[in-house]
Amino acid sequence: MTTEEFIEKLNEIQKIKCESQILELKSARMGCPKRLYDTLSSFSNQDDGGIIIFGIDEANDYEESGVYDAQDLQKNINAQCLQMEPVVRPLFTVLERNGKCFVAAEIPGIDLADRPCYYRGQGRIKGSFVRVGDSDEPMTEYEIYSYAAFRKKYQDDIREVSRATMGTLNQDALGKYILKLKAGKPNLAHLSDEEICELMSITKNGTVTLNAVLLFSYYPQAYFPQLCITAVVVPGTEVGETGAMGERFLDNQRIEGSIPEMLETAIGFVRKNMRTKTIIDNNTGKRQDRTDYPVTAIREAVLNALVHRDYSIHTEGMPIQMLMFDDRMEIRNPGGIYGRIRIDQLGKMQPDTRNPVLAAALEVLGVTENRYSGIPTIRRAMDEYGLCEPEFLEERGSFVVRFYKEPKKQTVRMPEQNEEVKNLILYCRTPRTRKEICAYLGLSSVTYAIQRHIMPLVEQGVIHLSIPEKPSSQKQLYYSKE
Image (cartoon, rainbow, N blue to C red; front, side, top):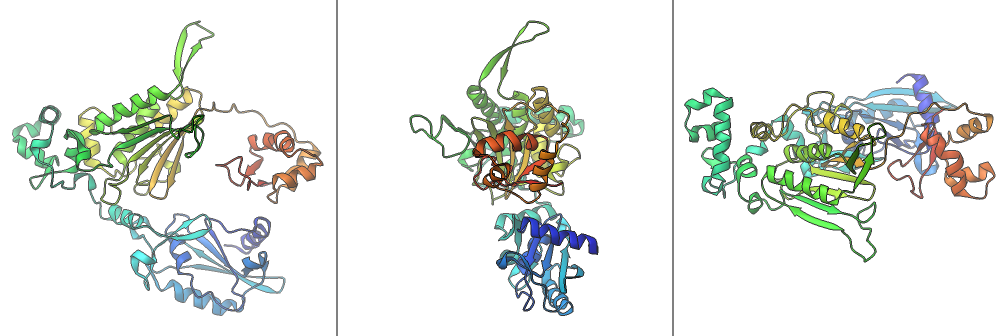
């Protein structure tokens, strides 16, 4: 960090007066904070790392209090960094401002293969942390396991299911699969069916695998009750809202069976609960029936959830969730993004595969192409429907695909800003509440002030929301970056 960047960061702190996903503030007026381990761990365990700035008193309205001794502080910070596994190597920057000294410690994110970074004094289970907003939260046992699963390439999709036997599998379906294998892979034709089953992980050391249960069992949920899909239609926009008669769900179904069966049943559930409207083509005059969402996108999203969910013992008690709201639809599957790929890289590069044997088997069965085309297909289908870009989110321990019914906004040229608008944007360089903006504009109606003066600027990308996922939140702040 350069001196100029440090000064800019201090100025920004005085404007926003808060910590963030990559920013932690410490006073250090009277000495070095005794426990930095949690933050050192959480920053090291995220790709972007983070910055700890010493000399800001958060408890006293973010006063620039300065540090007691910059040299001794760096020495004590480094001593704590040496207690981490792997060792954290901070990059220090010291700044003198208004007669006070400030220290910034940049904590780099460590490689995925080396995570989790943890405090040795507490061990991997209790000493590993993850950054959630502006706080450091203990990692769950599953989050810790997921790093080891990637590093050691665990194959949970072919773990043995001791209760299952070859006799409990659908022999007709299994036989057709073996025939397709022999037709597509001629060298396998020289082997016996038993040898093929062992080679292709239908069995492992003679025991039926999870892969075989999910594909060929008559009822996989007899062994794993929660390896299913729970599908609900919510009367509103949030879980917990009720309908006119007090009902929590307008439709509610537990979808079970093999993966191919669950896929088709899930699509049927969505079709049943989507509205279908008739559109007349202005050019041809032909009638066309159109559902709320493109079925192609729904199929790909459900299939991705079934193929790429986590099948480890840590998540076998968690079903895939399919939720249909008034304004959107969400598909949630246990297990976050696998491997090194980031959310913004989805559909743009080849990812690591969490369940390679299962994915390959479904390719042979003709259920999936297994060519990493799911995300691009979803995006293209939504675009052709004229709907908003789908959202792909990673939440702690789960991956979420979100479809909106709202049509995508047409790109418009931003109008020239008059002096009044420029002043309003300047005023919002400090995040403002609805009431503050209303008072600044000299208006009596808060709703009118926001809808008439702020929302057009939000749509143009000039004004931003502090809580974009909840536009109507009472805690919403509006701010500009200009």
